Image (cartoon, rainbow, N blue to C red):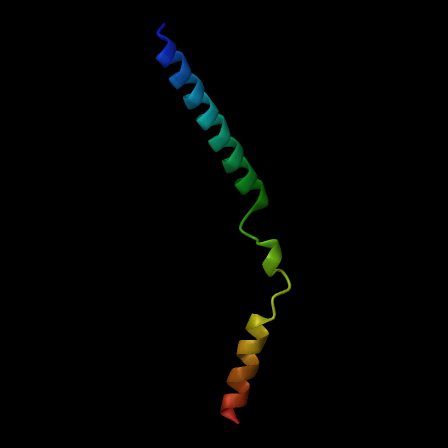
Length: 54
């Protein structure tokens, strides 16, 4: 095999492994963002709507 083919194959395998690892991490973690667990924004919007009605 050619030296360039070996390097290209190694890069391809590394990229494939990296992609699979990232996919598995995101799959296990889910869509929940830990920074947004205690978010007050929905309550603030609700309060503003109630204030505008008065």
